[in-house]
Amino acid sequence: MSYFLDRFSQEFTEAVAHSCDLDKSELTLEIANPKSGADLALPLFKAASKLGKNPAELAQQATTIKLEAVQKLEASGGYLNLWLKPEVLADELLSDVKTHAKYGSNEVLKDKTIVTEYSDPNPFKVLHAGHLYTSVVGDSIANLFEAQGANVHRVNFGGDVGRHVAITMWAILKRLGGANPDKLAEVEDHAEWLTAAYVEGNAVFEADEDVKKEVIKLNKSIYQIHKDNDRDSDLAKVYWTCREWSYDYFKEFYKTIGSEFERFYPESQTAPIGLATVKEQQKTGVYEVSDGAVIFDGEKHGLHKRVFINSEGLPTYEAKDVGLIIKKWEDYHFDQSVIITGNDIVEYMKVVLKSIEQFQPKLSEATRHITHGNVKLQGGVKMSSRKGNILRAVDVLDEATAAMEETVGHKDHTVMLGAVKYAFLKQGIGGDVIYDPKESVSLEGNSGPYVQYAAVRISSILRKGQIKDLRLSKTEYDWVAEKDLLFMLARYPQMVSEAATNMEPHKIAMFMYDIARTLNRYYETTKVLGSDQEQPRTALLATVRVVLTDGLSLLGIKVPEKM
Image 1 (cartoon, rainbow, N blue to C red):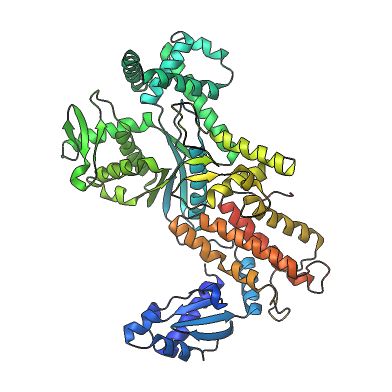
Image 2 (image 1 turned 90 degrees about the vertical axis):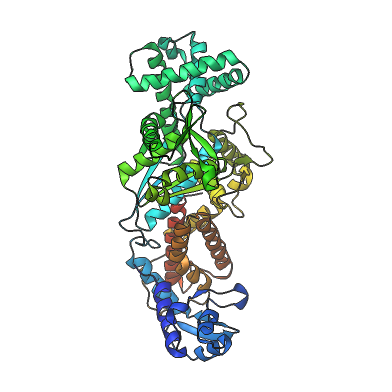
């Protein structure tokens, strides 16, 4: 699947290589420095150095090249700057859009299987803003992989066993006066009730040694429930009911934000696999006993030691992650597995993957861990679910909805959700995300609604205009006023490829914003409806809408019918 700029780059570098007797593999056409005013530039330093030639002289020599798409060539030091003919650019671009069913996509990852794991909320706890952020980022990265032809599997991992579950269950049993499953029918808001129980349990657990002992005992009982597949005891009924409440709550929220997961991996499923694997690899010396626990000595590899089986004989998070990676491999035989989490487990995951590398090096090598910072409201501070001052996922959406009603006087779920997602995605992955609700819903500036409105406005124009054919003859119109827009649209496939390869959805967000800004400048200088060039101009706008709609869809953002 080849697009105009790819085809032109091949043709142009071949022509330069032939004209200057250079190695074509040393030539890479790139976007020109904006200060030059050119469209593209070819640096000749590397190729010239290899042959001991002067790059400035080679650039001057290459200015005599004649190609149909080239309007002008100019030597600038060791660079060969070039300008494209807008009429050729328009013809090629509109032909590409009409020819390709999904303009911008490619098949670089065709036949490759990629597992994307993200969001990862724990049952018996609330979804916080970080889960929302990770869901948005994970969806976009998965979309980008699919745009490159990959077979993508979206999965989710969560801890339905472990200390946090036992802490919440301890508080639940106190609230119910013991293992009384019938009393659960009295609970109205399941998610809020579970969250409150978790906060209550943590407050007591941290301060009371007797409670800690009870929680440890309860933790073992919950593992036993899974081991025995117990569905009938009163304790099991309370556990399974509350666990189901959590998953129902997760699924409903994901539906609200437009996320879908093919599979939820609970820790109760991966823990036995991880436990068995660690015990087996203990025999080979990968893991070793220390103070009654089983550890991996990461210090031997420049990392740190971590416990994989605790002194109670139970698998820790580390062992569960080992089991998860192995389970994902058994289910999908992936070419790549991408895990997206917060920055707080960077060093932790290095140890887990280094331990797997000792006995399954291909699995470790194929696993990519991407991390991000915390989500904070403008002027806010980091919050903690254990302390109860958590910034919940729904709080972020509620803040955006309230900001919409205050700013524009009404609320629209598609616009609100687009505002939140864009506000998250326009920032590069890695650092903390400061979310400003009012800024996110603004129709001015670098916001989701600003880009959405650009597509909606085109739809309004097209309903009034006349479009005969997207594929136009290059002799019909000079396209000079549209040159900036045409060049940006032609670059879109390369931008998708670059964003997908580097897993950087923010580049798509910023590119959409640049297109919207360029489009608005075009409206200021060029009349579309009622002009003698209405047909070619509306054809161009239809093409812009294709790109805006596709780019926003890669970000998980829909274009509303009207705004």
